[in-house]
Length: 455
Image (cartoon, rainbow, N blue to C red; front, top):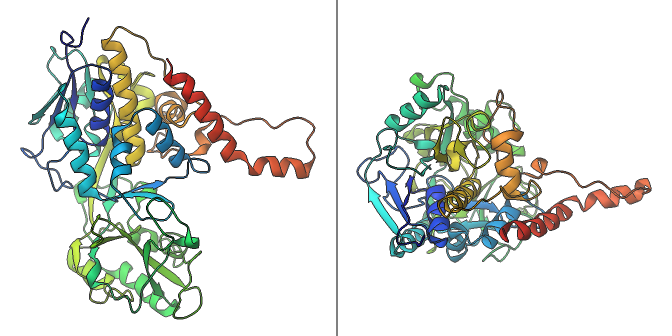
């Protein structure tokens, strides 16, 4: 069967996961119809109609493939021909050891590559229910902002109550409104990362009285409430700062405002607390407030954040916000090829499967695309080994996690099978051996990935 006679695979949602799935399919010679409801139907978080628009942070997190599971996932995806990682690498900004991107340039690259491919049809409009029966292979990659009609159809089909959690967006500041007489440029520990020089973040210092006053302002500030969503939990990896502040006065000092690895050149000491801002666009005119997701009302955000030294006259390109994310109980509902057990013509990909993070969402899209391509071509593709980042991630959501307590999960080395130490080591030798755990897991992962890619 040639690619000209192959039926297309339909993908619902042109976010990170849907875009990546489409790219994997067409790279295998399988035509795709990529359905995106924007701009005909807007969401609470998107600003444009571009594919793979980043609605929260512009960071793909650590790019250290040897010592960090996210960085390892980056490298595995690069080796698997990921469009998302190719576009991120081409749009990267200084961010210490992280892979951060110009969000507009990134989305433009993804959109341009997809729309230029002869096997991609980009169909604008909402799929307002279960896909037509004639669509025999479908990837649902609608993300955390799945349209209500489709969400209800999925729930009706599975008989499962949806799991939901709150997700928040951090503000973005115009650089020229930041007082660099009070703030300074430095990466934590002066770490040099992709496109960086060890001074990639703007740091706004707070002494103890300023910090405690800031905490108090967060606690008493007027907040957005969603009574119709009462009982919906927050995802721990993306908590609003005021929720963290309510857990104790020092919570933020040991979280997004930690001063470790930073040195105030004017005071010649480490500050009590720090607010970091990271470059958000290629021009370097916009910076986002790292870890400052919030549900404060807009006027309160301006008032409270202008109490931070260096931000007294801050002008905001975007203020923070809060929206509800939805994901399915994947360990119970999906098979190891991401197919819905109740209707195998439907695959799921991205954040709706219960993975958390840009890279993880795109990674599940990559796998869904490869599985669907193999199926369309009459081939069999096993899931990647659990020893790889890709395999650990899909293994977690399709069977390793407990369906009764399933929660959104970032990739981490705790999901990987351990490597047993050699026998006969002394205590000192065992300590030294354990210190190399992460590089050892990464080396094994990349070796095992090569074998899987060969299939």
